[in-house]
Image (cartoon, rainbow, N blue to C red; front, side, top):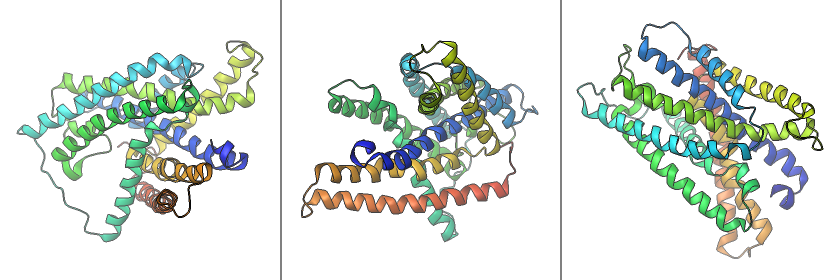
Length: 350
């Protein structure tokens, strides 16, 4: 759309890089979360274990390296369906586990207070806005436009309604129940709170194991989907469209460049193991402009509503306000990563 409406320069050098950042950043976040889930399973069975987080991130990255060889979006259609049920399953586990802990005698002390430092409070707000944008921006992803058969508009709307119905049901239930139980102690992944500081699970071991297995399987599916746009970009340059997708001419560059992509994502996830911070960066630099600013601009340019009408100025206000949000959230996200980098060294075992 950007290519058709704004021209090839804007499409190639603005929208394209943002979409690349969103997709590749999501792969980094999923690889990190997969490593954290594997570490949780390890600590359930061996609380005094010595294997570090970055080692589990590397193991999950190796697993992703195998899945990444699936050739196209079409080959992922069954994985996407399974992913939906896994999402519902682990969200139900996270919600049920939070409620269980909240009602038990082991419930932690709850602190809902705000930061006393005004600077931390303000930057924290914009950091949170970026994380929220990442969570709810997942419904607007590149492959939707490329895979829906005509008529597109009605099917896109139905697809987005289904997406947000699932998102609201899962995200709200996990967020509300998790914050109710753990308050300000809630971690970037709520399942991490299900293990106490001394390594003792706060829920039955089998339940925690099941929740983490659901999470790992779901993350595998999501990471493969978000890796595909990067694959399409690279293979559009280096592959030969006149050869079959399983020919040696195309298989070799596919293995090489997909291995490089997964390797880079794994290295970044292991070096900066801060899941919330990664989400904030994706939201600030990617989802806020892509989901709020760009659509409003495209609408005004395409349909040219009257400058004396409410629609035109509503779009202008949306574009300006969320542009400001994107800038402030970007500053807050980078600031938070720098703060965490001071508190934790690279390849931290968090």
